[in-house]
Image (cartoon, rainbow, N blue to C red; front, side, top):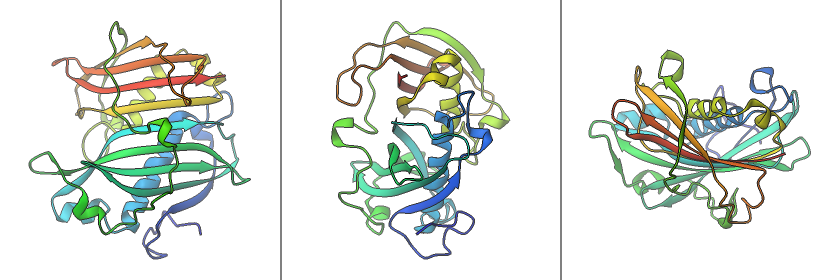
Length: 270
């Protein structure tokens, strides 16, 4: 059953959020296919809608002084849908791991085949103290969807990334109005766009299969300067990462303090 993002609570509580929509012009590149940041945008909207459906959306959480913060995300794109293709976006919670609430995602094509799979790890944070809380009190009342995994255990979805060395500065950005979300910090999708903008455009346009892992380490606030660093990586261990045509590590650092704001690894196959 398709859900209605305009009225997330309208069809009653659902274990798995699902909505169908066409690929629109604003989320494709010169290859006529869905971009990586477009995928993250679709997943963000699905997660927000499903949280509202499950009565743990931002308004409900704010009443108890809590907020959801995305900490880690991994996405494996096996095929990029094309402009005007109809896709089905699905998302569901899947219990917790220590302090992290786990949420999976997938995109299916019009034949019902999963072309994108993803996993995310979220923190529930005390808004006043800015400290993570144990998620059980919230997640005990949500569907656990045991056995419904978008990514295999071998894919290490939403895992902690290692620190890379010999990084070279690739760009510098200032966090401005269009970078910010409701919480007043740089939106998680904007980080993906910053990474894309440091790449040689032709590599992204030619890529058919993509793997991105990203850890969000520290929030970036309006006006802060961020230095973006990258380096090619060649440790292609694991079945999901083997033989990538191109692989890069990224790190974003706050310019004033040198504090790492995010780390990411991107792998591309033509």
